[in-house]
Amino acid sequence: MSILRRTTRTCTIGTDPARQVLVGSEHPVAIQTMCMGKTEDVEGTIAEIQTVEDLGCDIIRLAMPSFDAAKAIPLIKAKTKLPIVADIHFDPRLAIAALDYGADKIRINPGNFFDKSYLEKVITLAKQKKAAIRIGVNAGSLEKDLWEKHGAPTAEALAESALRWVNFVEYLGFQNFVVSIKSERVPVMVEAYQRFAAAGNDVPLHLGVTHAGLLIPGTVKNALGIGTLLMQGIGDTIRASITDDIVKEVEVCKSILKSLGLYSKEPDIIACPTCGRIEVDLPKMVHEVEEATRHLKKPVRIAVMGCVVNSVGEAKESEFAIASGKHAGALYYKGELYKANVPEAELVPELLKLIEEKA
Image 1 (cartoon, rainbow, N blue to C red):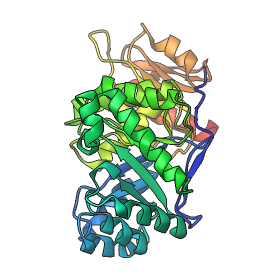
Image 2: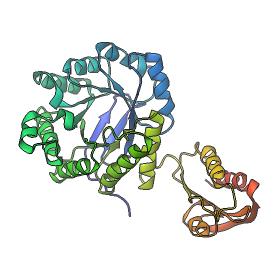
Image 3: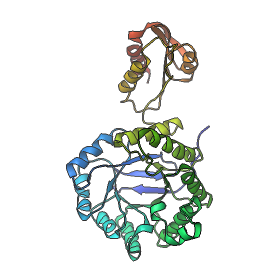
Image 4: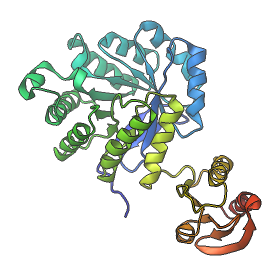
């Protein structure tokens, strides 16, 4: 069953068609991450971005804590392919500087601006520059009156805040924006987005579980939060917030989208867990297949199975498959036996030849 997206509006990130990304409506769910280094370290930032440019990342975000960071934007844009999002907190003057220096999009949490009178200036300038905006809401930026009303950053409070800022931005005639409603608590995050969507607002949504932690807990939290919402048609761009290299964030995002049939830029590799029945070096085979098929920009399903229990069943469900036995195996193509009794050492090379021929 295909997943129906609820958003019909589109947010355009970037004015240069060569680096432009469209978020929302019928467009693919966009993957993004955020650089870990100092933005003003131009060469270091460029090198970090290049680690994810061809990995599947669509949008890159940069911390913008100073005017020196804002000044680095055009230097970084000149050497990278991804649209640049400037991450602004507290000081709206930095948002204005980032827009003046060419940011394709700015992320702001209006609730933590020290001077709310600047917000209208930021929106007006973004409109003039044809830049996009992400309106963010989380516990740290929740307005004082909503905190007092709800007693905590509940899902209801976060959704109410997001709807408040959407109304403000749209009152100013600005439409090119997305909304994020984040919490480190997965149930709160999910409910907040559900409440926002139920209110009938058609704004594209940025999904993520904020400060989710190290790789394993961070992956689990983001998979549960982001995955739950995407299955309901809620969400248009995602970041898996993880305390690790940004490559891991992108890989986790891709895995979430693949599991829901929402990623079409590379193969989806299926492999069984190891157990005492396996009589081939399955982990080695899986890694070899994964490395050798990274160049394929197609959503083909490849199964690498280790024993007779699940091998044939998974092979019949995949476009390409290895069904292993005792130090040997068979190759399948589109559910049909392609070649039997292939020695273990030849299974991966033979599979790769088959993929090269048929994919």
